[in-house]
Image (cartoon, each protein chain N blue to C red):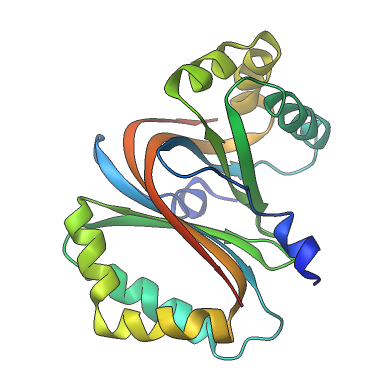
Length: 115
Length: 115
């Protein structure tokens, strides 16, 4: 994998402090519109004030972790209340997730390293 | 997937506040001892004072996110300083990761839901 392709998976974030929403989830089987919804939510989140970045991955068993990063708690609250996001939140447990956990956290320090 | 198998992927955590170490990483190709090291680190972490749980996933492109949860910043510092963990930390960028980012965060609220 090229350094550029590799780098695209990582959020480019400012110096802490900032906020993280850690969303761990187990997909149900079958797409059922999940892919289109997920793409749309990332596109929409990126347009919100205070959005800093997102990192996301999912294994072959359908267990995924998505961490989105935000400038403030207000930005997280506003995104949560966004009408189109609300529809996805309400649909989530019925349509796409066997189980999920959301944790909202304040990032206090960070460091990274490349090979 | 049974509810039990699904539940095993999620950390069972106390009420916040507690701490999260969000470790996003891009694996290099080939195992090179990574699997054995990763299993050992999870086993060892789970024995440390203040360890609360861990959630981890990685996609087919080798992009992984592991979030470990801890009772305090002291517990995170002690785990970071653990001799066997130190060896893995120093080996990491050379042997296993093209790039990684670590963010330490204080979890302030959490909620979950099952289908």
